[in-house]
Length: 179
Image (cartoon, rainbow, N blue to C red; front, side, top):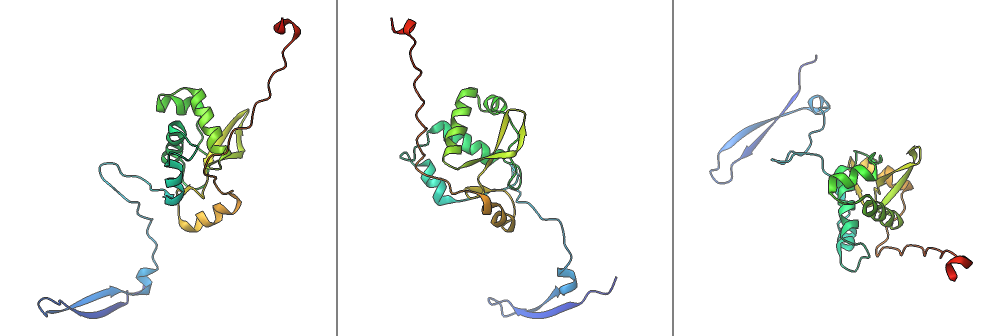
């Protein structure tokens, strides 16, 4: 291993006028890559997601068209999303059990968030008839900014206020039901 080159600089303490010497490692030392350090906020350390604050303010606004359950499910996806743009590989039943709500409420909230573009369906990651969803990287992303730029290239823009659900066609009444 070649010897490290050091850069020496002088600095002064402005309050006392004392001059001291700083030694800064050279370029060879700066080129060494250490594993990235995650933020460690005690008592709950963990990864951090980059969120669009303006978009999140719109979603949490009373006039957004998203209700409390929608926001709970969005918060769940923000909190539990895997690193990168991968889908959250949990069923509605698993999500419902963790949040203490019914599967039907999770299903409706995911459908509403998907319709608005805050959650995107992961077509490649289906298991049988089970669909998995991922957080839209334009709304939030867990990972380096360079990868977020790549991830948003195929992501649509989220919509606030929430789009209305398509009207369900009414079932035609049979003669027996009509009488």
